[in-house]
Length: 167
Image (cartoon, rainbow, N blue to C red):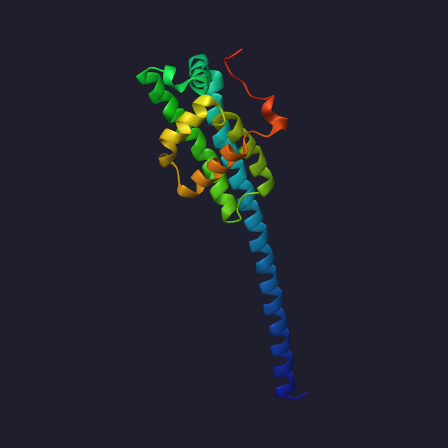
């Protein structure tokens, strides 16, 4: 066997090694992307849960939220401030999910849950009034999402989940 044949075999083996390495790196990148997307979805869910729990764990805040959703104008200045901040933080967590989905980093299936929760809250008398006066606090693309939700209304299958102070 001469040196040119050995060189040809070495180049072929090297090329196969490079191709195998590139395939492996591609696989690892894909796996890392999936893991990052799942982590992102978990973080968004965790942020959302933390905001919701702040209302659940604090009876005064739960009462404030329910009264605000029924009749926003009945809140005092301090209550309105607290309501505004609570709604803003809550909506920012949902906004992040929709923004991530727009770039393909959040499951479209999970967005259905967020859309339904959004409808339950924003599609109330106080929620609609809050939205018309404070939507500029959020991104234009998310404003379009919420405006579409309000146009479509709350899906019938989740309307029974709505909680209000009205009887």
